[in-house]
Length: 150
Ligand SMILES: [Zn+2]
Image (tube, rainbow, N blue to C red; front, side):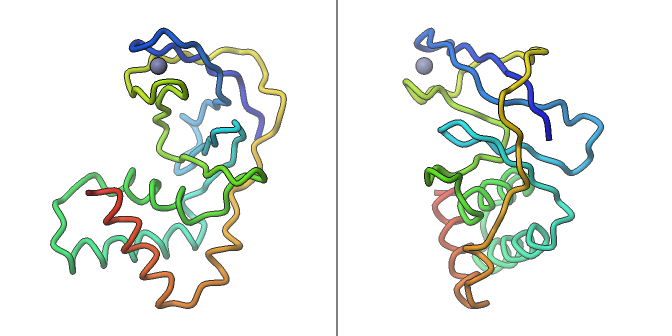
């Protein structure tokens, strides 16, 4: 997938930074993951692994009586933790919210530009996840959800 430059401006410290972006308004169920490097990866909600992780998140939320939260961003946060990171080891964030890399503030403005991002976004991979046993997958998701909702 081709990406464009998305320009960010931190309202807390004034830092300006650029991340890959993409107009996904006509691509239902498609999410762009961005790592700290930054690199980009594309996630599709019809990937069977997406459905598998969504079901494990739902099971855990029911059994642990966790408060109802918006399931989509939670599932995509878990996916960012369990899918393969970029080649430098930095995890992809598929939630679409990118805090300031300098001060970690979430009060960040951004705007899409028409400038081409010089690298392509490849499909998100999950080789690490595929090697886990079923009990290990459930335990990994439980631990990720507990950390994210703490
Ligand atoms: Zn900042």
